[in-house]
Image (cartoon, rainbow, N blue to C red; front, side, top):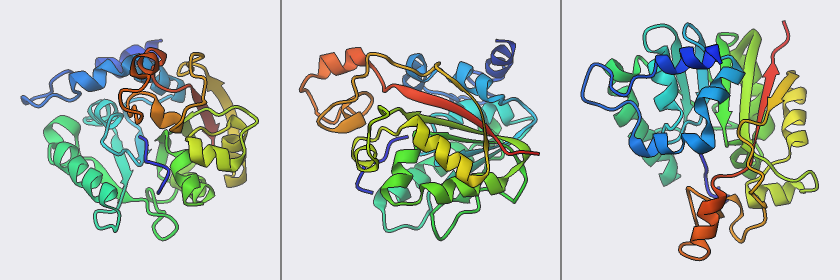
Length: 262
């Protein structure tokens, strides 16, 4: 999920449990969402993080629910998905709209998506993602730059640590900045350095387990007038260089795995 800066066997198991339709005529994932699998590699990404049925999984700031459409059907009959979402009542209209749309699409249809629990992440006031020590996995997809914009990135990593069981996993996917980027460049561009994300996790108490290049995109030059939002799916520049930007595809992304020590 992007917010404007102003503000393997395991894999086979994973996707065998994500039906195109589940019990009703509501499609669990839209054709447009599935078309983006080529950039987001959900099967390989979740397998790397060790996500599987039977777990309690927290998805932080799911936005419109692109990954929710993958996770919820998998956990519907065996496991628990917790969406740590925007507040339903907020001065930020974007937050209100996405939260309402998420409730309408996902929460209102447990026959497709299961009993999704919704909590609120609105740092620094509301930071309880899940009951303390209850989650097996906490996931965040392309959110760190948003928390940096409000100076709350460490608060959120600390909250993820609190929510996880000992031995629990934090999975982070984020637009990857060149090592030379300053904090201000990260905030303005939406790209974050791997070292900065690792430092946030280490400060929260996590140990680094490893990284995957499954979401890497070497064609991403990371130097655009509107930062990462110049690329698909946002294409903030409109028709200017649209074809070339579409050829690049979505951003180059780090995929990092951390553990809460036993």
